[in-house]
Length: 398
Length: 176
Image 1 (cartoon, helix red, strand yellow):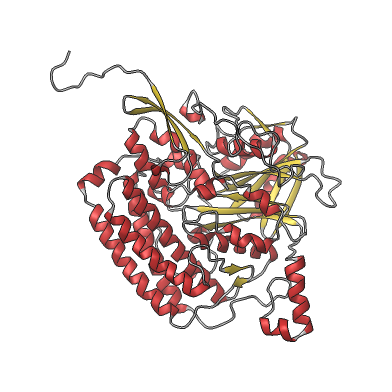
Image 2 (cartoon, chains in turn red, yellow):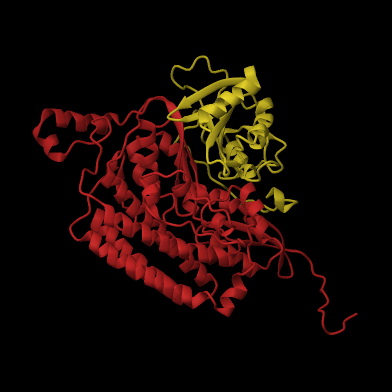
């Protein structure tokens, strides 16, 4: 009976469609298969591996220090976070303490990386939802941060900045001042973009209650990063198990309650503001000092020693040709990457290349629940949810 | 509780079923046989003083040709990285797998993330997980022969895919 208030369901045949592997909404090479009843998803499957490059195999066959530039190809939206994390894992393995100035520079470059990671994630996700303006706002400031990376390291995106035992280059004159100026502008842009969408009726309709990750689901799938904090669990490796002196900075871990796409947006906005806060404190606190550890088994000697002393030349030659040799053993090291906990499980056989490197990419866990959270929703909701999980194929497939 | 305290507690409880223990730079690990794995993981999760309720990662290791390693009775290890959200500590459980004829019990019903993680271990090392609902390759394609992260798989070997798989849906979305 149709009394005019209820729409009778129309019986349809189930339709199976493929989304991807090359689709504008996947921002990378992901393949989804959806079974549709009308416009409702009744079953979903995800296939990954389209960007599998044999990353872990490569790490076993190359020297530890040569993995640093390669590590940046994991989460290429915030590249320095990964190479910093890789160097940190090796330093834990070797028992090396990094000088305070190098630690602060790592904190600064990592927080810059987190800002651009979130900027790209939200900018592109909003494009998927039909809001192009925010994309230009976000990418504008991403360019400015790339300019800063260029001043610091000579490269814009894949900067190959850290070294095992420190960082490769010190900040040039005036760099910190330009950094402070850019992060201030960035904070302003974050506020403007948030003002554009936070109470926007269309945006709220598209995102509230869409792609909900409940607490239980998050725990079961080991979700980390902004996706976890949006579900209400305030876990952040920077707070839980601090490294690089994060315990000395004042910052909050933003959380939300519902774990939907809207909450993930708001958590990322708040995290960008916290990153700006950390950068400001780090710049205020940073003191002159060495940027590399003084350990001839780990750090390359300064160039004037290499060219003018026999010992320096031999040291340089030994490190380049014979590599860094950690003791036999194994270790798991975790840091907070752009999307969550980035872990490296390294097994060493005492040689200059790892016996085994297992990478715990945050996206792998975060994406594994994706078929569950889109089932029962509409196709357009799946697109909105996919962007807000921030799947980076580089670290998902390795 | 430090990781070595957890190690002591595990040894007291499991005795000779702990096949090997390991401590390095404040981290600790135990190795057990596949048949002990689930009991140990459930014990670590449910003990109130240990409460390792998060499975952060599962990764395989192939020890074929590992130097000075004659007394290791198994070729593969599968390492489970655990984390306690309540008490903020970590611990590692490893299971020794003699060769690929030995099956490791799946833990996907305890932690849903194990579904994909175990698929990756199977894909890369050929270790099978008993009770897994959807044990297919995950990173390599279906026509791939061999297991890429084994030490006897050459690094420069390439395998081409002639045709992508038609259906990737599972019967239930929980298995996907």
